[in-house]
Image 1 (cartoon, rainbow, N blue to C red):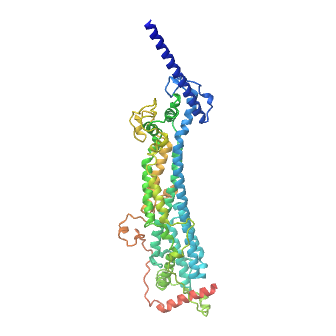
Image 2: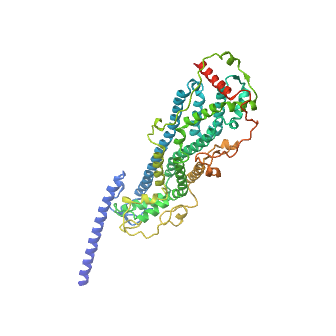
Length: 555
């Protein structure tokens, strides 16, 4: 009798427990139905109460509120869920550096335009019609500088362009200061060939060449680097998740649904292993990414210091005017050198017929550079302020790819402590957190990663960053090696004036260095004595008389 009574009590308890469990399970499935439908799925996919989960492919089998159809749909949702935070972080990074690229590019272009406007205004006031009649020379000069900034050596050989500019300027000025003579084209070609030997403009051309080369190479390479960053981030962040990654993400994010625990979040270390497996290829970008950022920071320091684009372009009108004044003040000596090297020119019959013209001697002189008179750029800031801002952003972007898992597995996406989902139950996650990168995934307990097949898109971006880093490092030394393939095929060499030579350490002016390969003269131009044909006073008077007659004629 007692045995029968005991069996009845036990049976009642079992029935009660089974009833309570069934009720709880039924209730949990109702929670799952609500959570599932909130994702935009059909609530009818979810069973009203727990079913046999033996057919499930990802989540734990046994009693379950999930079906195979639900697993498939939640897998697609998982693909979006793991991509969303990465996409958001990547989009913010792209936006940050796309804006900085626009700011720098606009700033440099406006400095070029303002420099051209300033020179035109100053030269009209200083040289009058003699400048106006030759204004196309300076217009072409700035157009060439702009083309070089935009397209580099593929469009303009900067050193050759500058040499041609000074040679052309010498030819025009030589005619002006020797208006009493007639010069054939062949004679002027002789003059132009020896511009560097004559040094009619003093040391200005050499210094300006080095200064412009370093500043332009640094500016355009830095802007190119800023432009590259959003492109790389966009391509890398849109790499598709592998099937094994999606499977692991679904298990981490939605398998708690199957047991009715819709609010249960994954353990942090569990999340880290899943995300490090999913982002293994992206993490391999980190080394070259950081090298690239270091090179950008180094070049930014150059832009703030010796390669400052703003300090080159602002006073360029003053520098060119200084060169013109050097030519005027040394016109007699330059002319005598030319006459001895290229031959004595024929007197001009037109000049003799106009000797009675009113003497209106040219008195143009360049005016002192006044920074306060400079037009401001629409960018609304100085180069130093732009550079300081972008340096902070560059530093913040370091280790972006290797820290993505930590950034994603934080906050509301995980559960603190041991009350978290470990992949099978609500319990502590016992596995060891593996390292970043593809090679480390061989021991990943949660994501199957084929370490023998690196992602081709990411590998290509690693190569792109490596190449850009080499350009940045070259620009840091004042060299432009970003030359197109056709130039390399034709034997093109690096352009620029580097800072690796000993002359950079001994030069007093941090912008300038001694030319490494001086050109051997073709013609021995001898220095003329004051007694060679005309006296010093008579020669100067004749030169300025010619200028005056030309000015009168232009009027």
